[in-house]
Image 1 (tube, rainbow, N blue to C red):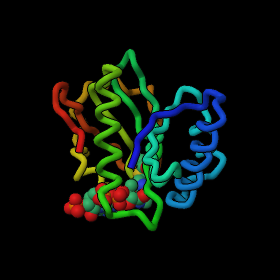
Image 2: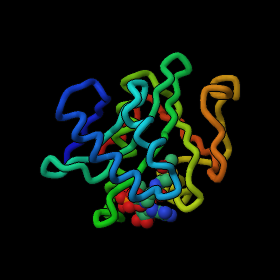
Image 3: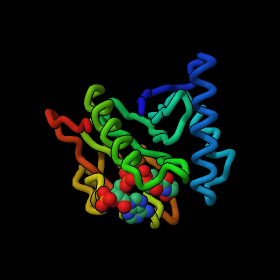
Image 4: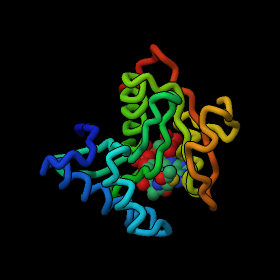
Amino acid sequence: LAFAVVTNDGHPQHVVWLVGAKCIFSQQLPKMPREYIVRLVMDRRHRTLLALRDGRVVGAICYRPFFEQRFAEIAFCAVTSSEQVRGYGTRLMNHLKMAGMRDGITDMLTYADNFATGYFKKQGFTTAICMERRRWKGYIKDYEGGTLMHCAVAPGIDYRN
Ligand code: ACO
């Protein structure tokens, strides 16, 4: 499994991968409007961390870093159905924490789907938001039907696996 962070920078390979990630998100998150997924994945303020096997996207996390606020909001996170429960979701999150750390990100926030709160808890996320409200309030959108969850990214910890 290989990992890469890409954004919609016009590079043909990146666009192909982002389309692959978008397909996984829309299959795995059927309640999310497809146009909304496309808009965020292709938005240049968002980045997408890809899990690639033989050059094909098998899982991805789309997120938006807020560098000045030192946090990132996870918009979408999914692994293709045939590859779930093999640890890829955990490896993706560990890579995201490492990538965030390199960019000075100290916290991750996400509105977790109620079915996915168990996954996020295993990745160190809690529903208690131990982060000053002024750092995130107004930066991220309220999303109905999801539970806001937080994870502190501890500098110096090696999350690789
Ligand atoms: N509820 C509870 N526990 C879960 C869930 C879940 N929905 N999914 C995985 N887990 C557990 C696994 O059992 C595993 O536990 P273990 O370490 O004790 O064995 C642990 O979480 C990690 O499992 P992985 O194999 O690393 O996770 P996987 O590769 O299956 O990826 C993911 C998890 C991304 C949630 C995947 O199942 C998926 O794509 N689900 C459908 C889409 C989805 O719900 N995405 C999140 C929506 S919220 C958002 O995007 C912001």
